[in-house]
Amino acid sequence: MNKIEKVQRWLADNDQDIALISDPKTIQYLTTFYSDPAERVLMLVVFKESDPFLFGPALETEAIKDTGWTSPVYGYLDHENPWKMIADHIKAKNTNHTKFAIEKAQLSVERLESLQQLFPTSDFSANLTPFIEQMRLIKSNDEIEKLKVAGKWDDFALQKGFEAVQAGKTEDQVAAELQYALMQNGIMELSFPSLVQSAAHAAEPHGATSEKKIENNKLVLFDLGTVWQGYISDASRTIAVGKPDEKSMDIYKVCLEAQLTAQDAVKPGITAEELDKLRET
Image 1 (cartoon, helix red, strand yellow):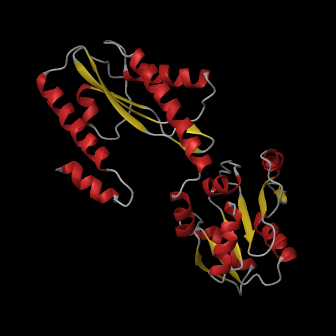
Image 2 (cartoon, helix red, strand yellow; image 1 turned 90 degrees about the horizontal axis):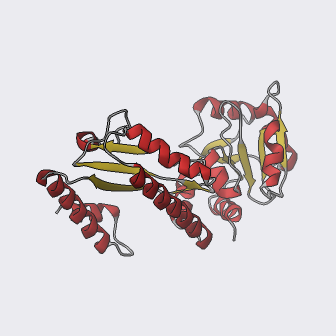
Image 3 (tube, helix red, strand yellow; image 1 turned 135 degrees about the vertical axis):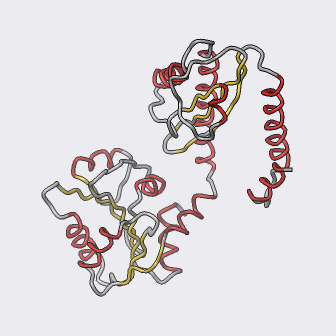
């Protein structure tokens, strides 16, 4: 059973007719096609008992087909009303369009109201988001391989960052070098802006890479990740420039011990909360 079929099974099991999927990341997860439509409309419509269709800007239709998507694709131009067009395509395929499941965590109120105006007697109360989240928790072998590739490029980027570090360089310069090395190898998307933070600046959780110059005998924190075919890596590492003082090394050792303790305790069935409590002890 593929991912679309799992959504169709959920619709049948939950007495729903149609799933309206509006989150670009969910659409990518289910179809492999990704685009950020910005102010435009991108929607995957999944029917309980017939083929789905993808709807989006006309300038994206060929790119959708290039992914291998074999079900219908419909595009619209900026002067056209996308919601009416979606409604027309649904009505052409389904006469019992009474119960819609939506992604409540993503679909805006304004867009929901646009749909409700076109389907005034329909029910939009079903929330598809928890089911999609549960689906994404369990990775297929293919997904695991993609995560491994993303992790491999994360390791590559970290190594390039380590090699770039030297006293007198700014954090920005080190981040730029590791990101350029990724781009030279075709890795164009990062999980988030790479963080390189040195000395006391490294104590700011989720801070920002800055123009601060790296000092000798200090620690440097890296936090970065890469994206491979929609799958994301994320790793943090700390290195030393020269020989940091005893207090800095004590802090490093405490953090390392907590991390290793949690790693050793990982096993099927244990919760993240339980691991976090182990780390604190």
